Length: 476
Image (cartoon, rainbow, N blue to C red; front, side, top):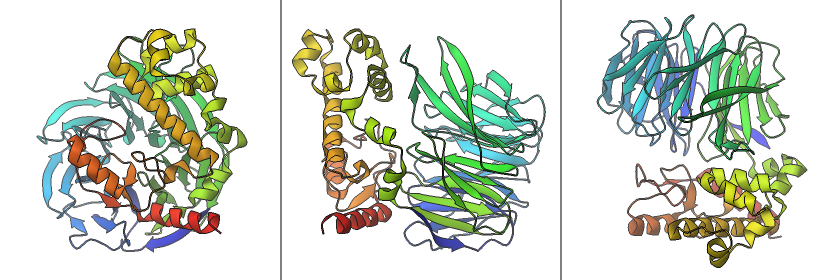
């Protein structure tokens, strides 16, 4: 189900962080360097390593498009790099001069946060490279930072154990003691969950710390109702401080790395342990999932980065029977339909659908006429959007019933992909289909309707291999 496919051993000291873009892997270390590798064959790029920092590099992260890499260091700077040629774009100095422990891009690439050892957190304008706002936590140094998927707020974690929530204007919305001995990392799942009563979007947050725990929180923020953070559960498995945690791109898995030298992969739906990986010989300091591919990178104080590959077919088989059934829309309850509407940015329709007792089976039977006459949805554009989303569901049900994993289906053609590529929106498509789409639709994403940051398409060789393996098994 998961296997070690490559080990990188180029750093001369502890690996502190690793991060993926659609085509690259970045790693940084106590040896003051940042290294860049191609996901095609894990060879180091010609312009790597990147050198500027005069002390240890603690964190690195890609902009959503992958064109820019940020790194931060004990030297008190956060540096922006052009990933295509390694050129240094900007050096942003922490106002206090304190060592910078963590940096993170906003989902829209407009902002970058940097958190320092003295508790200061800076919000930078990532286009002008100038300081936008600055704040600080009450106690301790900053060790973790994560933006919500919609970019309306971000969370920082401190060495005193506090989770602090900031809005996009750097106003402190909330602060809560989350881990008794200090927080080491936090991460948001990109997949929203829903409140059954109000149909609002909520997000799942993971945090980990020196108390040996990985905790799950449910967070929400609207300008009307304000901010709310609720503790949900704790993941068990580690017997020593947990230094890193990260969600997979689809939110189905959560990974954590620990001082006990192990990496644990959890199923986020059942909160059960899927795998325990024990190949590192010293503390595991960092872990990251690739966007929209089944790759995991883990870094350690043993100076190495391990690359792991998940098998798509067996991953699907490992999910619980209940989760498998939930994939079939006919079995959805009215609450499941509400959750789906919120995920499709249709939360304003939750009340109408509930009033008409629309469950999964009824959802699949909706037509243009029933949306207008029975549900009284007046907007033609809104009806068209709902029908388009329902048609996607019908196709998904058909593919699930036939046994084809939905990850193998092109979102445009709804057919099994032969030559999958990753677009800059993070989704995989059939190459010819997305090329035609871009040429006709003026660079918009078929999945989000937002403008694509780039028209560069990256071959998804991992997915292609998984599809070929599935075909070999099922065409005998």
